[in-house]
Length: 561
Image 1 (tube, rainbow, N blue to C red):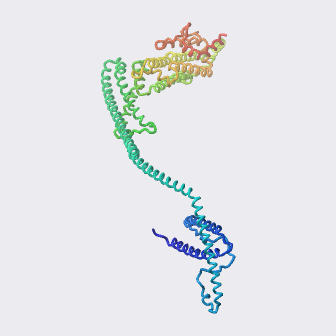
Image 2 (image 1 turned 180 degrees about the horizontal axis):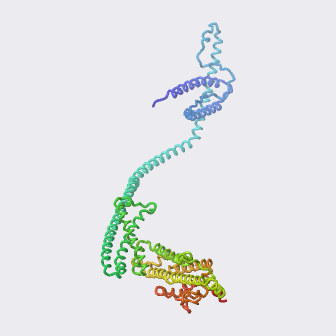
C-alpha cells in the first residue's frame, strides 16, 4: 500500500514528539520520587488518568487526521508539582563538571556521594512502592472490567456468527432473486412483447376481415345493380304493351331489387362509418379505409346509393300521385333499409303541409284574382245594394249599374270556385296522400327486425301525419280567413250573408255554402279516412276544421240579429 508524503511527514513528527516527551517525563518522574511528599497511590492514579487520556487521544486522532486537522500530543506529566531541586541527576555530566579542580576535598566528595546514594536508594524504594501500587491498581482494573470484557467478547462472537448467517441468507436471497428473475421477469417481458405482436396481428386480421367483407358486399351490390337495370329494361318493354300494369311491375320487381340494394348499401355504410367513428381507448383501430382497394370502391358505392335514392324518390312521388299503396310501400321499405325512413317521412309531411299553406294563401289572394279576372276588387256596396240606391243608380246611369252587377257576379263565382277548388279538390288530394302515407306506414313491418314503420317515424315526428295535416289545414284556413276578411269587408259579407252568384246558388247564405263545401270535402275523403261529419256525430278531425271558420258563424249570427 502506498503512503502519501503528507502522511509520512505526520508520522515522523509524531515519533519525534513522543521521544522528546518520554525523555522529559523520565527526568520529571525521578524528581517526583525524591520529593518527601511522594504518594505512590496518587502517582499511580495519575498514570492511569494519563493512560485513559492517551487512549482517548488515539481514538480522536484518526478522525482529526481524516478532516485535515492536526492535534498536538500532550506529555504525561504528573499532577503533583515539583517544589525542590533534585539532589542527583541521571543525565550525563556536563563539561563544567569535568572542569572541577582536583583540589576539592576528598571528604566532601564522599559525603556528596553518600548523600547521592541515599537519595538514589530512597528513589528506588519509592519507585518500587509505585510499581507495587500500579500493579495493584492494574489488578483491580482487570478484575473490575473482566466481566464487561467477557460480555463484550461474547457479544462480538455471537454478532459475528449472526453476521455470517445474515451474509449467507443474503447470498441465498440473491441467488433466489436471480432464479425468480429468470423464471418470472424474463418470461413476463417476453409475454409483453408477444402481446404487442398479437395486437398487431389482430389489427391486421381485423383489417383483412373488414376489407374482405366490404369488397364482398361491394361485389354483391354491383351484381344487384346490374340485375336491377336489366329488369328495368325488360319492364320498360313490357310496359309498352300493357300500360296499366306499370305500378304492379315496378312495385313488385323493381321495389324488391331496390330493397336488396338498399340493404347492401346500408351494411357497407355501417362498416365504413364504424371505421370513421371514434374508437374506444385501448382498442386497436382498423385502417382498412386507407387501403387503395377500399378507396377505389367508395365512388362505386356512392354512385349506387345515389341511384337507389333517385329511384326511391321517384317511386314515392308516383305512389303519392297515383295513390298506389304498392309503390309507396316499396319505396318506404327501401328508405327503411337505407336507415332514412324517419327523415324521409318528416320531409314528405313537411312538403305536404307546405302545399296546404301555399294553396290556402293562394285561394285568398285578391290581387292575383283581380289580375286573373281583369276586374277591380269589389267593395261592400256592390254586393247587395239597397233598393233606393239601385233605383237612383239606375236612373242616373243604367249601363254602369248593369256592369257593376255583372262584375259582382263574376267575383262571387270566381271566389266560390277558388274555395271549392281549395277545399274539395286540392285539400282532399293532400288529405288522401297523408292518410295513405300513414296507413302504409302503419301496415308495414320490417321482416327481419319486426319494427313497425309508423312507430319508427313517430320517434322523429312526434304526432301522427293525419293529426299534423288537420292541424295545419285548420290553422292555415283560420289565419288566411281572418286576414282576408279583415282587409276586405266584401269577402266577410260574402261568406256570412246571402249571395247573388249563379242561378243555382242565389239567396243562399255564404256560411251555409261554405259548410256544404266542407261536407263535400268530408264525403270525398271518406274512401281514405274514417272521418264522419253528420248532424248526429262529428269526428274530432272534422271538429278541428269546422272551428277554424267559427268567426264566420259569429258574423252570420250578428247579421241575423
